Length: 169
Image (tube, rainbow, N blue to C red; front, top):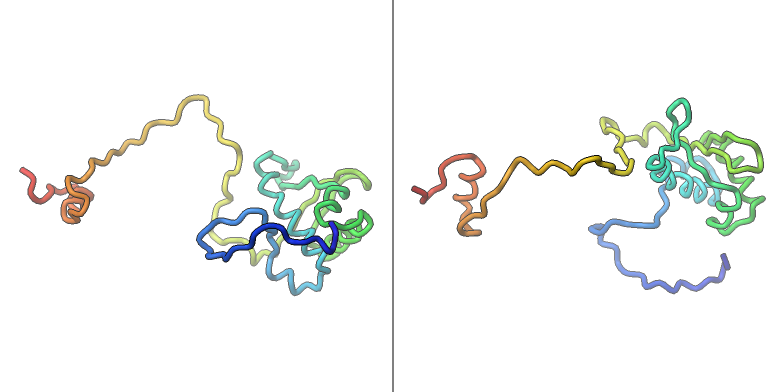
């Protein structure tokens, strides 16, 4: 990437109501670890691929999810040389933020690690596997009759509580 590349996309105010796409997840505690900016960006790119890895079922024998990311692809995405990417991966490994398995010089398995305080407590891991059904989804077991008057709050409340609606016979 050219360092003097000009921003060509329109920038608009972000209200927080819209969902974001194409962003890097970087965990706040890691900002205090003294990692280089390239290491933080590389970690964000690697961590961002975990959703895809989970969806593809890329887990090892122990059930740990891993990411495939070649040095060449990471260098392209970072806009850095392959030598820089190799140094960055070693830096992340030394900091404990990344584990690697595989032969050097090949596409290895990357195991991003996160600080325990960054995990949501009490939340279940979401199933990101593709939805496959052998039969159609069952129809919902509930129905809702439209209110005779959309502004009739008493009728709607009675209907929701299973009581006889006011004004009905």
